[in-house]
Image 1 (cartoon, rainbow, N blue to C red):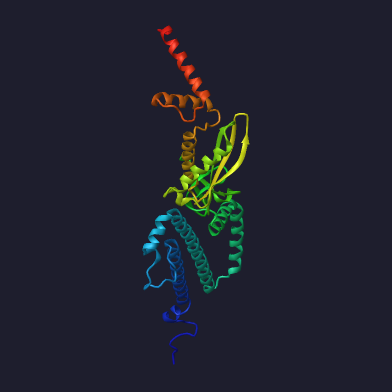
Image 2 (image 1 turned 180 degrees about the vertical axis):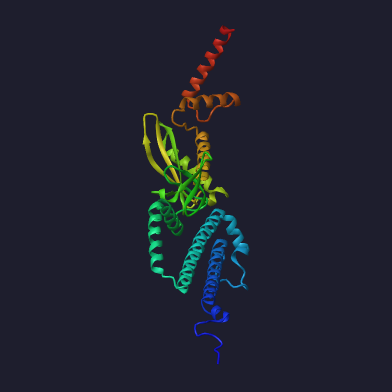
Amino acid sequence: MIRAADDGAQTPAQWFLGIPLRIILIVAISSIALWLIRRSIRSITNHVADGTPWLEREMLRPLGDSPVGAVLDRANPLANARRAQRARTIGSVLRSTASIAVGCTAFFLILDTLGISLAPFIASVGIVGVALGFGAQSLVKDFLTGLFMLLEDQYGVGDVIDVGPANGTVEAVTLRVTKIRDADGTLWYVPNGTMLRVGNKTQGWAIAVVEIDVDYFADLDEVRGLLAEAAARVVADPVIGSHILGEPTITGIERLSAEAVTLRLKVKTSPAQQWEVARELRIATRQALEQAHVPLAGQRDLMATHRAAVAERTGTRDPHDTPLDDIANEQGAREAASSGPAEA
């Protein structure tokens, strides 16, 4: 009898069920696994970015869609933007890492299925990786620093930070660079690996500091009382007062010179609100000192001139004038009256 086929021959179906089918299975399983991993990462990071719990059931109303969540979102939009960008940046890193890991595993399995020895290939890849590592040290440093910065939440979008050469508001954070807009409008691109230290001025809470230089001979007890009155006025404000977290503090003499005595007013505030609170404190302090006729450093003569002009314009005696002030004012008026006809 004639044998239908040689022992070493294979039919197309047998050949397909061998190496090709194994390669197809490796590619299919790897693709499905990668899709599931990337979808899980995207789902988790989107929930974190939106502020909704990951394990929240559909029958429960998400916090972000509730009235309370809407109020919280409006109350702190910078924190929401910071959380969203941080979550999405980490999600992008995790998805890229998953793609590289699954792709490399699938590639090595396919080579092994084809009967190709992996030892020389792995050695070559290792040498190339070492060479690239030495050539791209700064890039790797930037990525590692950016990753740890995001994980530790050192700063985020909307924070005002000081990194040395650049000082301003963070507009964007990536693994490689941080974009900072300074007070002049310049946008700085700072590589994360070059940041030796970072000062965050808007994380947790802040301190509003106002220094007042009053006249050397001013009554310091009266000045302290006026500063306390001004601070109480700012605290009672329904808008600005909501950002104040503690009682204002008036310290002793901070500096003493031949012309001025410096006092300091401090108050704890919400993050990123210390500048607005300090501006309101300066306005209230100026009004309180002016109403009490307490001159700032070097302004005693100008204060007296201003009081005399106001009294002449209104035709009333300044209640803060002493009898000596009255005599001086009368003498000045007589001199002005006597010099009038002569000049004419």
